[in-house]
Amino acid sequence: QVQLVESGGGLVQSGGSLRLSCEASGVILSIRTMYWYRQAPEKQRELVASITRDGRTTYADSVKGRFTISRDNAKNTVYLRMNNLKPEDTAAYYCNSGFPSWGQGTQVTVSS
Image (cartoon, rainbow, N blue to C red; front, side, top):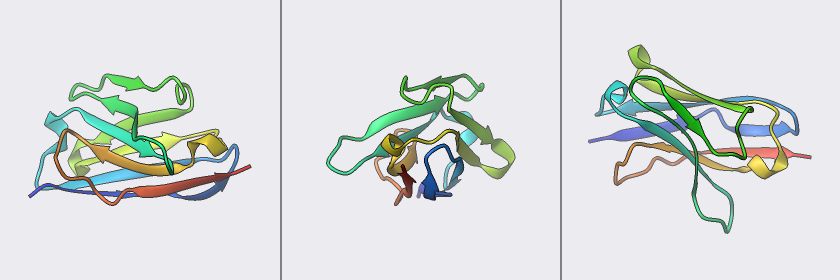
């Protein structure tokens, strides 16, 4: 059974940084493209970043230059480093790779 656990969220001031982690069990992340999504209240879930098995990355225009997705295959973990955070980044953040179930996510709140 695949289980994804997101962590690392919190409350930060505008301009601050956080690093989110996505730890997996029941699946080997290194062979999969992994995605970070976010969902703000009353908004649809949106794709933030992705990383392929060979390390190619893509980003939403709204986070380009500020967020960095990476992976540690030895730890079966994917990260999302977020710099220069803005209030509009406030959302619950989730990782996934096409699995039907989702983790609980980790809340990021950016104050102005």
